[in-house]
Amino acid sequence: MTTSHLSGTIIRPISGNYSTHQTPKPPRNSISFIKQSRTRNLADNRINRSRIRLSLVGEAPPESSKVEVERLVDFLYEDLPHLFDDQGIDQTAYDEQVKFRDPITKHDSISGYLFNIAMLKLVFSPNFQLHWVRQTGPYEITSRWTMEMTFSLLPWKPLLVFTGTSVMGIKPENGKFCSHVDYWDSIKNNEYFSSEAVMDLIKQLRIYKTPDLETPKYQILKRTATYEVRKYSPFIIVETQSDKLAGSTGFNDVAGYIFGKNSREEKIAMTTPVFTQAFDPEMSKMSIQIVLPSEKDINSLPEPNKENVSLRSVQGGLAAVLKFSGKPTEDIVCEKEKMLRSSILSDGLKPKDGYLLARYNDPGRTKSFMMRNEVLIWLEEFSLD
Image 1 (tube, helix red, strand yellow):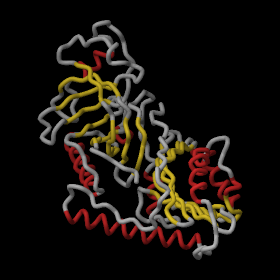
Image 2 (image 1 turned 135 degrees about the vertical axis):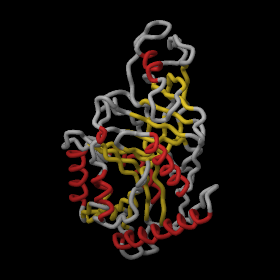
Image 3 (image 1 turned 30 degrees about the vertical axis):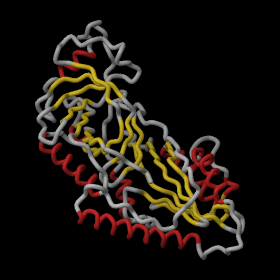
Image 4 (image 1 turned 60 degrees about the vertical axis):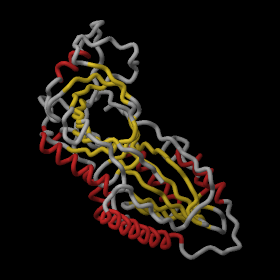
């Protein structure tokens, strides 16, 4: 399968200020009961996380201790991107008895910590993307990341995606990291070996058949229990009008363009997925689209032979994406769109009008339970803070 994700962009904060307790900002344009529910959930999560951190870090450090936390923030910006490459992390920055824990793994020494990294490299081929690092307490640093792991031991090589934060405690006596606790965005119960964490991992092992073709490039910023937030790079499409979201009207016209029915009779490589876009909630206007290879420039592409076929640049941007398998009938797609939009609103995000159905497979050659389908809704904005 062709990898189409972007490497992560690391954003350094301008200020070194920190806040131990932050009040969550209420989502815009959401009804009041959603605001209250989200605030309660965030408060519960903060209490949960505080309890886990205290159990690992221990008692408060002496006031006389002097640790250059700002220097350690800079160090992590440089060191963490090497977590899974040949260089590796600088283990001298960690206390011998560093306590590591995520929702399915725990170790109580630097040797166990390094063993865990080595096992992930061996079994999963992880791709780690660091988004930011900042001080969040007198002796505490938090980082935000995305990790994608291909489980190569299974024949279909599923891609597992985890996003979240790592809270790292600093031992004041030696200025080294004495604890490292990971929190996943996709679960509420981040206690060690919670059933929710195990199920979250297992459900990502399901079979999805993704063709070995180029796809639009994107970076996964956050993965929740329901959807992913992706940042798409710009891409070019060839499109024509369609009459149904899950139909195939117009596909032969856009496919004909890449198969040589254009002004230069030029054949263009096939990509995936095929998009169908509804531009408004009433689905009064729809189009079916094929994405063109990323090396193409819209100014140098041949003109379509048919008047109803056109080329268009899509600016990319932020999107919430819900993945599902099976045959994407009109009713199922509409149900998935409602589920996704409801989740977006409950999380305080602002979706744009309309949505897209992405179909990755040839329905005549792929068993329905292996099909990869996605519903995509563009977002007005998104922040990883």
